[in-house]
Figure 1: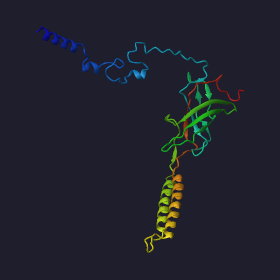
Figure 2: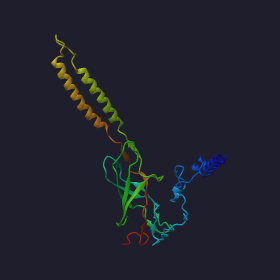
Figure 3: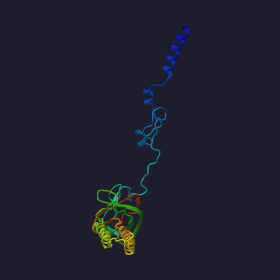
Figure 4: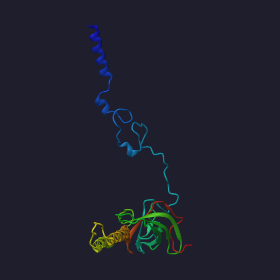
Length: 262
């Protein structure tokens, strides 16, 4: 009797100390048990179980060093003066269409309407791409002064990166090459002479030579036409297209703009 009672008490103690399935499923990530799943902490840069104050920002406040500043996030409205054709990389030119004032008060004119923007665009176009990447590098003022602005991206009126206007997928060229490929293949097969054999069942020499020539010419033509079909789309931006230059670095000026104040 005593031995049986001891076995029962031991089993009860083991069940009490073992973690249940529910407890394992509810265990926090990093504490063992269930597989760790990402939570809202990933958006705040805080690890689960972190007791630090996530609302404390250790970065110092960036004060204006000069009131004549165009802050990051501002836009410079412009109009394209030269068109874009993405077949080759090149320089582009646009013109500022509205005055741009300082970001703090909006009273100081810093970039007047009529300034020229000089930039470049990328010709690295992938299949299915409909927007061309461009960057603006220099502002030329009406009085001849100029300002280097690094490489500030261009966007459309909605703020979407890149410029999208017209897309030429070269469908006529692609389908024309496909039809030409089919015609050449069918022509070589039709041009082959009828297969004949001699009294011993051997194929004629003319038939063998014609098949070899047709096969080689067909393979060469197929390769050339397939290369012609492997062409990326051409993106075109017409002159007069309205865009925005996104300010990604603070533009600081010594004083407001005054024409010919050299």
